[in-house]
Length: 258
Image (cartoon, rainbow, N blue to C red; front, side, top):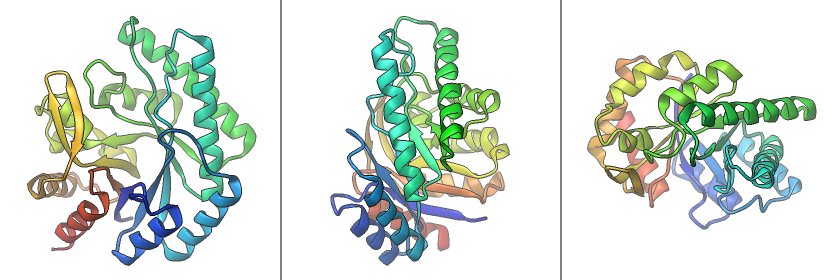
């Protein structure tokens, strides 16, 4: 068990150079970003995965943003599932365990109806993953906007009822609560999960929740690390999603070791 610190994406270096750069900086992990589509072959995924394994860098995957398992359009729901499955296939060849995705939107539906639609979609995806024998975990992410599905309660309920995994985004939860939910309160709710896959960064928000990610304030890093320690969370991978993920991940690593 360990607290691993990593980065979201390669900051334009490309995945192989990004993995090498993470290693050179003393970081532990990298999340491969399929932000606008899964533009990677299985062969490339194998190559990146082998390099990461050789260097001791753990990988995860972020599926494309164009996903809504609660869409009223049947075609869009189908395409959303296809994007998640494509991400899972690449993750399998990358030797990346966690496949992170934003599950969907409420639209005109109430939260419970939305939850049930997303739960049904995740169960279908889990069945397909098992059938294809991919060694990956689905990880729906906590979201930062008030009117978007993905509260801590909703995500933890999905974990309990579908046996999927999850991605806890501390910055999103902070923004979604308008700064009222502390890191300690978040950690109390998640410490039972075993290994935790997480995101972190600075965040700009309004009454409606998240607006954009910002550079990570050292004081916020300190508060999070203290909350992890207080709640005995020592099996976690924290991926930094700030505009300078490598720099802020190093900052986090240094504070953790000081």
